[in-house]
Length: 251
Image 1 (cartoon, helix red, strand yellow):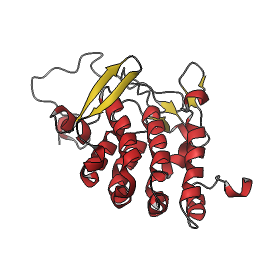
Image 2 (cartoon, rainbow, N blue to C red):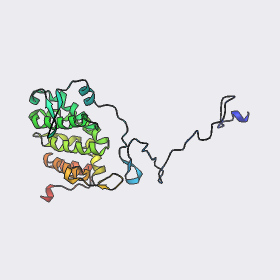
Image 3 (cartoon, one colour):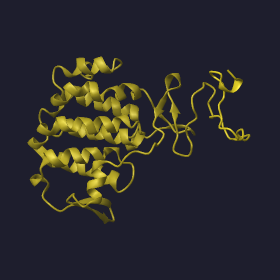
Image 4 (cartoon, helix red, strand yellow):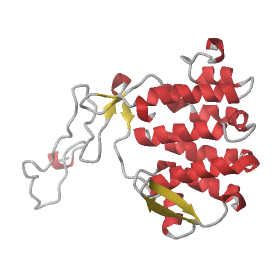
């Protein structure tokens, strides 16, 4: 067997030239061997053990909310005035099919571009304000979009979702209790971020006045979960977030 056909040898087509110098560029790594994955697409923050905590702005597929809004399927438009942007509803909210519209608006929680992010966020709050007894039956349909939003690990998406969750559990009777069976799907991210402030590279990001400090928002949300989730809420929260202490014990 010739040297050119030995197992493990390098094979190249007859008459081809060897690779030019610089054709292969080694990947950049940090000191701990992790890939330095900025690449102009956003910032990776390293958490415990060098794992990525905040998403790097990777391109995501368009949400159902964006597709339907662009197609004109939502009865809404943006109303600009001196006090800021508002949603102009073209129909009475109370007459909407919540099984259809509420999950679609929740799918927009993943949006970071305007006007989609604003429309999804404000649309959810409007629907929760007016939904009453229409909200509880739709809760199971909201879990997947909530989980997707939290798992983006985008700090702004997570803080928006936490505020929505707080509003959700207080929007109607029994909604907080209806969420308890789904804690295992939505609380892992809570456990990861519970004691974190946001490091943007040039200092610690404190934003308590805007209610965007993720550690504080997670604590507030867990407390509202416990207060609205019935007798089984605390033990299920504690199972998923071991460092959480009952708000009732501090009252």
